[in-house]
Length: 342
Image (cartoon, rainbow, N blue to C red; front, side):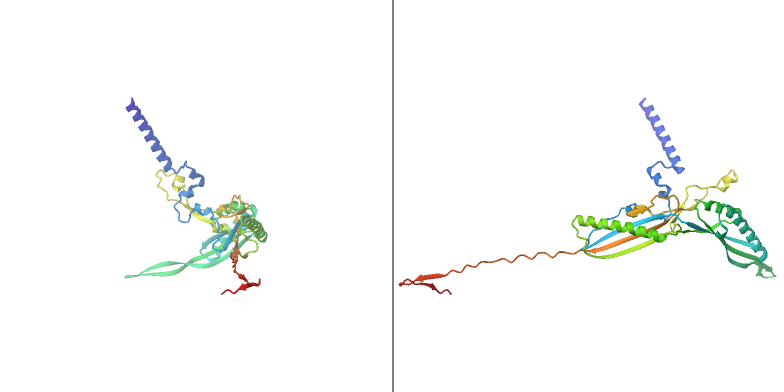
């Protein structure tokens, strides 16, 4: 019975091992790391997560200098956005190429206006209209000649579309795709009250700095009244700077869409994701909870303090007492006289 039990137990363990390997091959994770996402397992070299960097090292005086460093971040949703689309059109003549591209742009404009875009927020920017050439092969008895001949015209334009709600971009992209406009070049973010944002960052940085100074004073480090050097740095980080490449775990197949019986393995797909600045790197964060890409404003304030060293007390001079002895004698007639000493 014991041998049978061991055989059953071995079989169950083997089945569990095969099941685990099969699930792992599907990319399914049951570890706590899955909470962080598949980016931890991504092979791309552009993503470097240094968790230890989030732990700030304490500043300590070097010699008689003390550095107090305060940094903050403000997450701000844009007040308006500008999307730029690119399209190219070819035609047998300049008139044909221009007519075809304008037809696509006008249809796109109509759909964009229906999606809420205002007439003044739609702009066409022409880039070029150039002739297109092809090579014609002229065969002779002992040679071939390749001659360049005009074949038509190519026209390129950009379309600028401004919108005010982030979710409007979905409808704009759909309207563009219906007109075979697939090239979304970039999206710009605009924030109106930049001065107010930096003022708030500076105000909170100053409050935190004053708090740090009081803490140093409370532990006996005399910061007030000491010689100081101040430097600060402000910066804006836009979403276009914060997108990183990413190898997707899913592999969509056009063969499956076409319902082919034999499906060849698809290569991994390269995509992007928004990699925001981590709140862990800042002393304070205004509007820390965000849903989509935002403009992240940062402010850093550094105070270098040269601590005054109190001079050491000189030892008090020692007072030496010297006792001089005097000798006297009495004469026969009763007089007291001092004996001379060398």
